[in-house]
Amino acid sequence: MAWINLDGKRFYYGTGGKSWEPDLPAVVFVHGAGGDHTVWNLQTRALAHAGWNVMAVDCPGHGASADLEALTTVEQLAAWLVAMIDGAGLAHVSLVGHSLGAGVALTVAGQHPDRVQALVLVGTSLTMPVNDQLLHDTLHDQPAAVDFITGIGLDRHYQLGASPAPGLWMVGSVRALLLRCPPELLHRDFSLVGDWDGTPYAAKVTAPTLVIAGETDRMTPAKNGKTTAAAIRGAEYLQLPGIGHMLPNEAPREVMKALRRFLSAHCRQAA
Image 1 (spheres, rainbow, N blue to C red):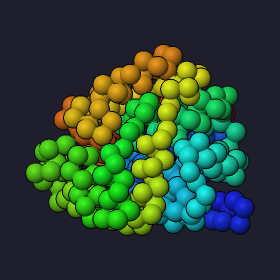
Image 2: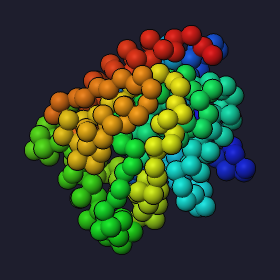
Image 3: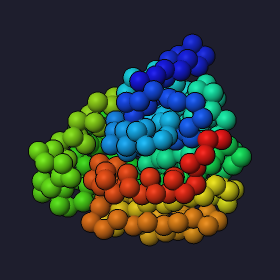
């Protein structure tokens, strides 16, 4: 675990359980709405023990990080992420983001193409409209919002009790994660992503890019992932069968293997 102080506030990031080593390439992970760095536990641990320095951030107000109440746009969240990268002393990084985090990663890659070695977008779309009722419930009826997010976020076989790890209740773990997020923060997350448009940033990305989509994703449908990949020059598209929107949780090994393959090809040498 590690901390960075920005303007008198402390922000947390996970390192995959391993201290950073000089001259290793750095990979920054950004979670989605209502999440924290723990959604990437398997992937970050695997990479940290296979030749990368890992920075899995808790976005403002999430996990152990202090909040920034003035955040109103994904672009502001992207600026915060760049400040975190600067605070860690990293000149160049690879970025991995899921859902809202993918929007943040794409924004950074479009705004600062010279600083991004590789880009991985998981469960993403160039725009992510949010249902008005969901926006209302995130603030006024959080249990209903969590039920809705869990219900459409996970593939049907996980709803019925399937799990990539024996004994793990997928629905319960996702619910517990979302319910840890204060209603005002969950509402802000979905408001941010609902107002964002990644189209102008996609056109400016120069880093090698991988877009990973879930075949049965109902929040950012696979067809939107294909559109995103098509909008980024040379991007690779990977679709995982029988997987919904919560790809880091539903398909942890498949996502980890895809990350190791892609990042090994594009950022093995430190920048």
